[in-house]
Image (cartoon, rainbow, N blue to C red; front, side, top):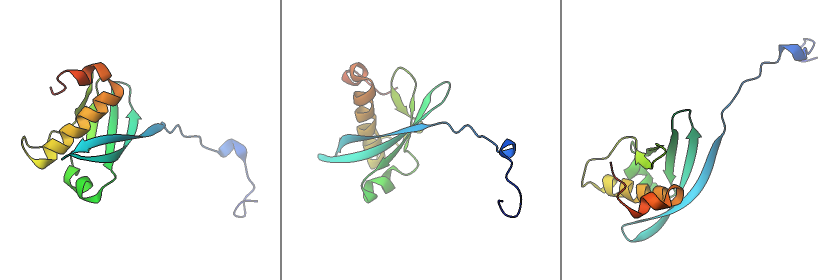
Amino acid sequence: MLYGKKFNPSKILIYHIPMSEIISIPFVYAENRYTALVNIKKQPALSLLNVTIMDGALETLLFGFHVFEDTGEGIFPKKRAEVGSRAAKLQTALEVSLNHHFYPVVAAGEISK
């Protein structure tokens, strides 16, 4: 008995929870090497990549600009940081590393939209 009621297996609800993949990627920013964890959430049209940097100060700098989209032709930020800012430079470093990992041919050319 479960909480005073008889257990009925036909009453179990099964939820489909989409799986996500987490990978670790290295990247270079300001001539230093860092590591980021990338949570890849696959969706029908594209995949979203949520980036978490394993450095508190850089993670704070990336706040609000940590989501990237995999369009099938390359990986691009969902929301771009202000051009020339430290956040934009960090975002570009991550964009280069992500494209190098997933699209080596794209990474060799221009990656920005």
